[in-house]
Image (cartoon, rainbow, N blue to C red):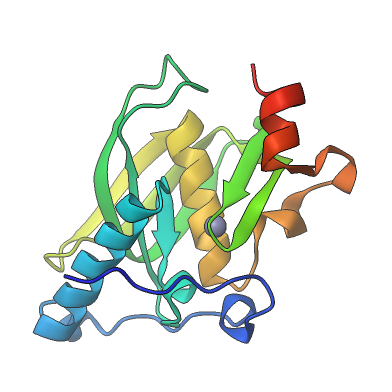
Length: 176
Ligand code: ZN
């Protein structure tokens, strides 16, 4: 396993729609190693999610994991989830605005409205197609990662840049 270099805002790979993964390549050693490396990279940098374009790979892959989360104490941890070619089939009209950050947008936080609930379809790392519902913080992370796969970052989803804060100021003035 290896810790991969994280692409930062301005790198064209973050603005390019990622290519779908061919189902028959999911079990290949190369792809399985990429998944392992993405998980290791996400954990190394304390991310709650990581999309392949963030490690300079323009493929529709995201990994998500939350061990504990003080911002959503009721939500509980999110077990390691690997999403390949994820598709949001439907999303709730109800939106919730909350703070987001991104490993590719270093040291900044901003408020982003996101659908509170989703229905998602994706392949697992075993190549099985799954369909599931996600709510709250999990739904937020999925939307954030699916945006990466479409060449978008959370800044694009902020209705106004008014809340945009450096991490230090976010912690000092805005974190509960
Ligand atoms: Zn991100």
